[in-house]
Amino acid sequence: MFLLAEGGHHTPLIVEFINHYLGEPVYRFQMAYTRPIWASILGEFGAKPEDVFGPYSPETAIPWYTIMFVIACILTVLVISLLKGKLSEDDPKGGQLTLEAAFLALKDLIVGVVGEHAFKYFPVIATFGVLILISNLMGLFPLFMSPTAHISVTFALGIASFVYYNYVGIAENGLVNHLAHLTGPRLPLILSILITPLIFAIELFSNMIRPATLGIRLFANMFADEQVAGIVSGLYAPFTQFLVPVILLPLAVFVAVVQAFVFTLLSTIYLSEVSHAHDDHGHDEHPDEAHAEVAHA
Image 1 (cartoon, rainbow, N blue to C red):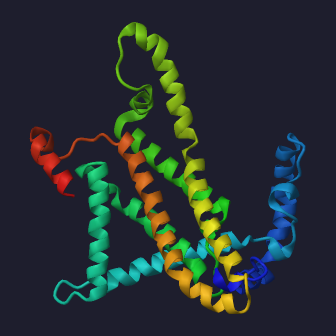
Image 2 (image 1 turned 90 degrees about the horizontal axis):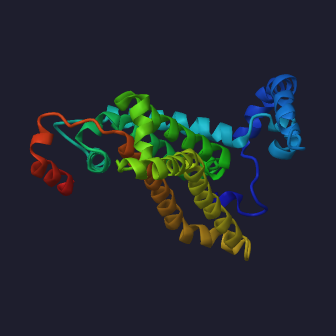
Image 3 (image 1 turned 180 degrees about the vertical axis):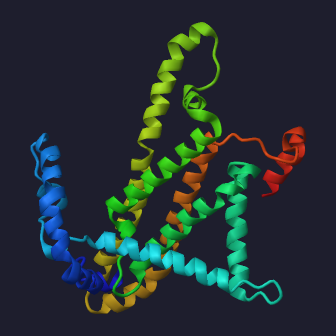
């Protein structure tokens, strides 16, 4: 992020390298298949694919945010593998203790928001958190950019969260009951005829725009963070290009962590709305104990 402060965003070397070798065949594929499809769709609105995606060329055939997000996915797998490989029950190191603290914090968040039964969804929620955190932090390192600073990536993450929590709702409750939770509370017959369809329409619309709200929130914060850093770093070059990054680095890390947490928390809240499976081991028979455990978490 900071190395790209002067003169705006420049294409990272790794993006140029990949497009140098793979850009030409991808470009030919786009011109032969994907561009005609987009031309027919956007033509209905009086637009061309170039107006939305920019000029087509072998140098930009594979967008930088696509390459950076693939790298973020690879780094996520590597980080999780390395952390798992260093776990030890006999001699836990500082890194393991930090990992365990993060694990317990995220576990308590999921259990506290959704319920004890939701721990089975921990791997997916944790993957969201780690992937978005790594994507946010990538812009702080040389030769990288944050893929979450582009709306296409954040919108795709929002769609993934939307698809997952609806899948869980349908799997646990069935399609009819899953849609029924959008009708609001049970009302008397006369009121239900008048009000329930309105509530259903509002809730359905609210759910349908969640991918956009999740994506725009994450994108806006990460993009604004990069823009502010770029503007401030270029105020009095070259001095501000060396001093300002040192001052803004803790703030950038804070923003990256907070935005990863917010996305994970909202995804968990959406999951709690559709996941109504009863906890095992008689939690329903002892509501006081169950509430005490949630409060403690």
